[in-house]
Length: 134
Length: 469
Picture 1 (cartoon, chains in turn cyan, orange):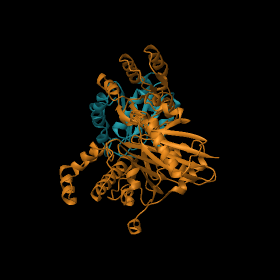
Picture 2 (cartoon, chains in turn brown, blue; picture 1 turned 30 degrees about the vertical axis):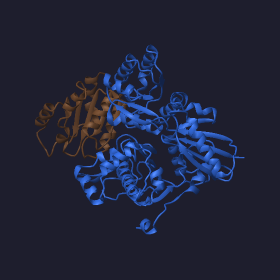
Picture 3 (cartoon, chains in turn brown, cyan; picture 1 turned 90 degrees about the vertical axis):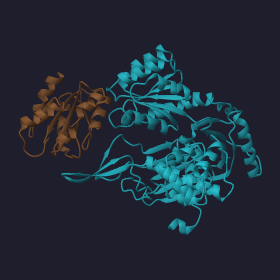
Picture 4 (cartoon, chains in turn orange, cyan; picture 1 turned 90 degrees about the horizontal axis):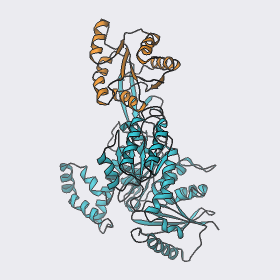
């Protein structure tokens, strides 16, 4: 069974989407490790090491995701998680910005999949299945 | 007849406590030096003579049981994967079992770390790492390395369940003294103490006390059943929770300042508030922490080491003493007893430092986080603000003329809003030094142990003005 660490990064306490993601991924047959709200990059990485996770899925709803996610790929590499998949989604930047630009910035930061606001987890699930296998 | 003799073979003193469990009374207490280097029996016999002298006659005991922290106590190495997770979980299991955690390692071990395990004469290794179904590579690597380097002290494996078979094969291959237990952290941030703790206690009884020359005493007494800190933890739990219809004291903190370490025990939930988000590894309801660098004699230099040059100068000038010299004097003569008011003053000062610092490391912290959704509270560690009682034990507190001043150091005297120290606790003192003994008794006669503690652990001595200040 593939393991996915999920949580809400930074000073963000939006718990509802987090629960929906947990429910959907668990139902789809993944081992979901939910570290909850107010999580730091280190919390995600530590949980991924201990659980031997295949993917980290970061949620951010409050607009400061870009600052919170900076340097996360580097920390993963330092921690021996070079191959781990990094997903991010939600309202990840301040205000309304051109999503193509936003996506480019997050790809440069080392994220594998980036989702704009309003995307349901079911859509991301297709990518997860592609990336991790059924 | 319901007379029991309870013994605590400490690192310095062998302490005896005779109780009558029908009258819920202490018949007498006595102590003498622990003589584990020669024959542990010598010190015990001397203490026993003193006890009979005090009582005025020889009496028979239904059972004689003991706890021990002699010959260095139970020395353990805690190994895990990530510092904040399985390393911390492993450490907490060792402390809960009454051990001293001399070494803590994370990720892959290296040869010099294994050499430290040998050099420090570690008694038991706790090997953890990986949640169940998670990382197993690290524990397998570490078990292999310990095997290759010929480590034959007991190893308790309490890591990823999925690695158990591989670990057992490694134990067999290298003919190691290995024991398999439940994972200390079965999933992220969940702590599972009991199974591994019981295994450690079992190994302590079967193997460690024999190796330390403590087993000899079992011809004289019934048996040694616990490491001393573990007995104190049992006593604290009983005193807090109560037994059957006899009520306990509710949430408590116990401070034990000794020659080599300062131990803190807290018996309470990690939080009762619904408006905080608790983060990090789950906290044990009965939590013990040990500070190996805070103590009155062996570890006195540790207290001064943590002070800045300026603070030392200030203390020396303000109090007219040479604190570095005084600390070294205590370190080189660990049996030193205060001879004059200046000695007493310095011991008082050191004890206050120990209490303050030990609580600083034990207590949880809270942070206000401003989010777009308003203010939220983020808590790590245990919230002790509503603790009912802070109880002092250990020679320096019991003998102090200013007990209140020492125990007060556990509260928020510096008004740091982040530290969740006890807000307004009552202070009690274990005047007769009976907590370890009552922890032992709780294993046979919990009701008697509880009633005796409630009778004998009482209000602090001293100036009422000072107390109500």
